[in-house]
Image (tube, rainbow, N blue to C red):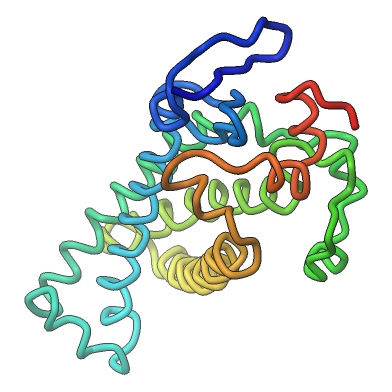
Length: 231
């Protein structure tokens, strides 16, 4: 068994990191830190599944260039039906995700110093005041929330076009397309940053844990808060 260490408490023999990660986070287990509990990871992957489901069923509707993709779902008419309901499921899952992570995604004073160009250089150390989530991650979160709302509302207009006037339908088509393209580009960047760019990050969304070294490098303030190590 691994050592369970909670700041301010006496170290005691405890469960393994995987066991702790089922229901708790921000806990040190040996050389690992629980970053995401099971509920957070599940809602993250549910949102991802519904997003890609909406994406792949929506592309054949969006352009004839992607018409061949409709055959994987049983035809274009099936895609139209699936896309609408997958969109609703995505919006519902994103709403749950917003509630789960809302407290951690509030911008603070340290976020004002965030420089995206410096961040993309992937230096060997972050700003020492970066907490559990940096400003870029928080911005991505709010982008998902805002664009999710816009995609849902514009999608409702496109689902029942006869109930709305031509001007609103045209605006909805434009907004739906812009948000879709922007969202897709952001997701590609999100996947890259969570895998190749920052090794160890993807691990936090599968096992729920990261190493001490990873936490100290990428989220120094969070590392200090969780471990009590002020060095």
